[in-house]
Length: 75
Image (cartoon, rainbow, N blue to C red; front, side, top):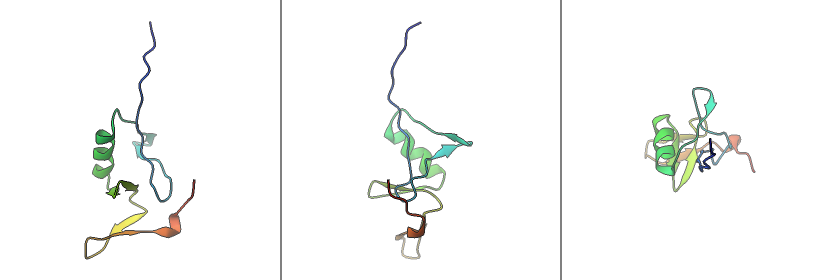
Protein backbone atom coordinates (compact mmCIF):
# COMPACT_ATOMS: atom_id res chain seq x y z
CA UNK A 1 0.00 0.00 0.00
CA UNK A 2 1.35 3.41 -0.95
CA UNK A 3 0.81 6.73 0.72
CA UNK A 4 -1.01 9.61 -0.92
CA UNK A 5 -0.33 13.11 0.35
CA UNK A 6 -3.28 15.48 0.31
CA UNK A 7 -3.54 19.07 1.50
CA UNK A 8 -6.54 19.83 3.67
CA UNK A 9 -8.06 23.13 4.73
CA UNK A 10 -9.21 24.06 8.23
CA UNK A 11 -10.66 27.33 9.46
CA UNK A 12 -9.95 29.28 12.61
CA UNK A 13 -11.69 32.39 13.89
CA UNK A 14 -9.71 35.49 12.94
CA UNK A 15 -10.65 37.02 16.29
CA UNK A 16 -10.22 34.35 19.01
CA UNK A 17 -8.24 31.76 16.98
CA UNK A 18 -10.70 28.97 17.86
CA UNK A 19 -10.62 26.25 15.23
CA UNK A 20 -13.89 25.25 13.58
CA UNK A 21 -15.10 21.87 14.82
CA UNK A 22 -17.80 19.48 13.72
CA UNK A 23 -19.14 16.99 16.27
CA UNK A 24 -16.40 17.83 18.80
CA UNK A 25 -13.67 17.01 16.26
CA UNK A 26 -11.46 19.40 14.31
CA UNK A 27 -12.87 19.72 10.82
CA UNK A 28 -10.76 19.66 7.68
CA UNK A 29 -11.91 20.04 4.07
CA UNK A 30 -10.54 19.36 0.61
CA UNK A 31 -10.93 22.97 -0.50
CA UNK A 32 -11.80 26.46 0.75
CA UNK A 33 -15.28 26.46 -0.83
CA UNK A 34 -16.34 23.38 1.16
CA UNK A 35 -14.81 24.84 4.33
CA UNK A 36 -16.62 28.16 3.88
CA UNK A 37 -19.92 26.39 3.26
CA UNK A 38 -19.53 24.29 6.41
CA UNK A 39 -18.76 27.22 8.71
CA UNK A 40 -21.62 29.37 7.42
CA UNK A 41 -23.99 26.45 8.01
CA UNK A 42 -22.84 26.52 11.66
CA UNK A 43 -23.45 30.26 12.22
CA UNK A 44 -19.90 31.38 11.64
CA UNK A 45 -19.60 34.60 9.63
CA UNK A 46 -17.29 35.49 6.76
CA UNK A 47 -16.65 39.20 6.24
CA UNK A 48 -13.95 40.56 3.88
CA UNK A 49 -12.33 37.10 3.77
CA UNK A 50 -12.12 37.00 7.59
CA UNK A 51 -13.82 34.19 9.52
CA UNK A 52 -15.60 34.79 12.84
CA UNK A 53 -17.01 32.12 15.13
CA UNK A 54 -20.50 32.39 16.56
CA UNK A 55 -19.09 33.70 19.89
CA UNK A 56 -17.07 36.50 18.30
CA UNK A 57 -19.56 38.20 16.03
CA UNK A 58 -23.08 39.52 15.86
CA UNK A 59 -25.01 41.37 13.18
CA UNK A 60 -26.57 44.69 14.17
CA UNK A 61 -29.89 46.14 13.00
CA UNK A 62 -28.17 47.66 9.95
CA UNK A 63 -26.66 44.29 8.88
CA UNK A 64 -23.21 45.43 10.00
CA UNK A 65 -20.87 42.81 11.49
CA UNK A 66 -19.97 43.63 15.09
CA UNK A 67 -16.86 41.90 16.45
CA UNK A 68 -16.51 41.04 20.15
CA UNK A 69 -12.98 42.39 20.71
CA UNK A 70 -12.90 41.10 24.30
CA UNK A 71 -12.33 37.60 22.85
CA UNK A 72 -9.39 38.71 20.66
CA UNK A 73 -6.23 36.58 20.79
CA UNK A 74 -3.09 37.38 18.86
CA UNK A 75 -1.06 34.67 17.15
